[in-house]
Image 1 (tube, one colour):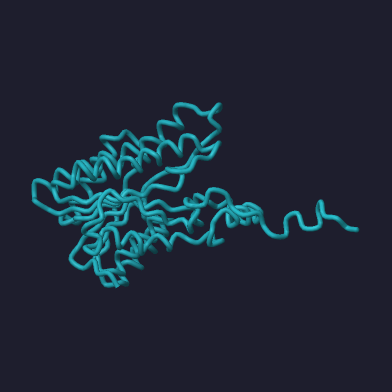
Image 2 (image 1 turned 135 degrees about the vertical axis):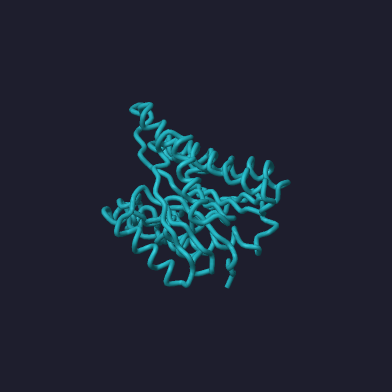
Length: 272
């Protein structure tokens, strides 16, 4: 098992979903962690308890990263280094999906999406990179993207654009920060079952459709992202820079899924 003992990590948006899976996986691997959310809730308390049960230090900070970028980023950064000054791992996970069809998109929705999905991780990374560079710390940054950063969907234009920006950010910040001994990588989940994707459970037909489009036929929970995140920030990945790891069951590599075998059976066949 990969060991993160001696490291400290801030995972933004880590009270549920992919962020929760990552922060809990870090704790199990031995890292001290900061759980971040907009406010303390029963979910936050449960995540903290599970992290502490792994025998590590776990703290909680608040902050709405979809607000005015400079104020929001400064608030989260200041709280984080106050409760855990030796942070050397940053996971930019906080994000939103609030899309509308392109012809109905409004500036407020677009701007909120970009502030949270693009602006906040860019400038929060800058804050930590400046701190690490001054202190000669070999920092590690993990951007949480999405399969939507590579494959488009017609009603997700804003979200797709934001995650495309994240994918490019992984590469551009990699080449900018590698000379400072700071590694930047990304993790891009395919469709996983989280509170943001509740339609999976609400509509069995949709889940069946998505399983059809995934080579391994699964729509898993967010826990599948934890081990990949641990690897990318660990010393085992010391020569991995600027890489976006797809956690998608093979969906991004499949040009077009096979038609189910039962479709079309008995149709158009000679019955004579």
